[in-house]
Image 1 (cartoon, helix red, strand yellow):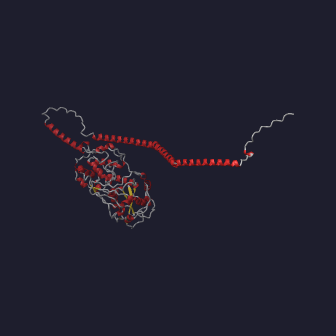
Image 2 (cartoon, one colour):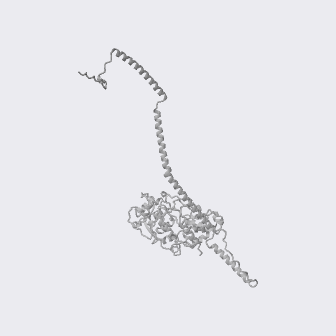
Image 3 (cartoon, helix red, strand yellow):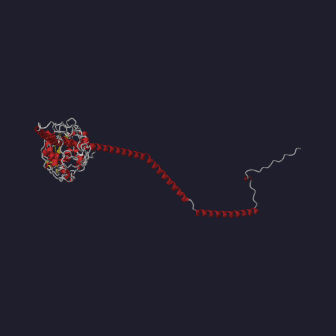
Length: 542
């Protein structure tokens, strides 16, 4: 079988995971609705409006570890419970769930759970999570369209046809309890869970059988374990897209411009064994590996993919709850479940409403177009030999054929140039973004170190100036006006006139008084210094 490309695979080995350290990036909790499927309806689960009854039989490989013999495993009581629980963080949730709860002694009186951790996981987290709406694939619909009918044969060849069209409705309370109590052993390929008040166990092979898969076939050495592979290199993406000469818009790394079979494969795996609730226009990581394997007819270990994702979901608070129909299938086998399954496993019909896709000329599987060309070349060679035998003796030997030079067909290099252009554009965009971020950082530093201190100083100066002006204004208000000043001058003149009159009157009175009564001689002590009198001359000599 001709392979389209060679993947860079790691050496095959058993899946051994340290589940205590597995915390992956969450997938968005937005509900998925595929416009291609007319049976797909909007889904918004409400815990308080779930189905009212569900029960399980007393059948299973493993006997219950609890003393609950004779008790009906009914989940109706669990649906009606609303218990307080701890507030989880991503780290505390992962650490608590990394411990095998079934190996611990019972520490809760709620018989639906073995430990308080399981109870808190259910009531504190899982009861609020969305259950992803998986769909079963309508292979009969695909048979009716030329652009998909070959894929049905390919799925049958890979042993996936029965699995893809297997249908199983589910009960959301049972699914949430399954996730709250799930313990997986990736080495021994077993897992355990609780349904109702009983604990059950199953192997990976039994899980595969319950979902119409032959575990011996998909787990053989010829099957591809995508979990152990490196993601497909981005330089290999262009070969999955239509050639540029068809004029179809392409977006490498996205769904726009994909060839028929890769586009259908991507839609199918997103609603089955590799569910995705996020951006439907992007294809990332191991989705490309799965597309490549199916295009080349390589068997895929679907159970390894599902169990690997279940191991992640046990520890991750941000992801939705996936694989409900496949989980419900093993629960029905192990427990003879007879309860109500309110969530329906609806059929999916890829590109049901996209006539442009369905009527576009088919892009063949890798190698099919080359085989057709080789067959045509063989037929023409046979005709040429028969004609040459008839005219061998009638014609001279032909001249040796001219050496033809290889010329690339139209659009041969377009995918590589487009990939190169996209890579350069992304690098330029990254450089521009880096420069913009650096400029923003410089401007931010300038604002913090220069502009803001200057503005602070200017604001202080402004406030000080305003306070000074206010003080001056208050003083100006206290100053007398011109009218008050004139009044002060008039008052001063009046006082001076009255003082002059008083002084004149007092002088006349003192003169008259002292003319009548002479003024007494001041006492000696009135004068600070006695007058100087010269000494008398000495007496004359006798």
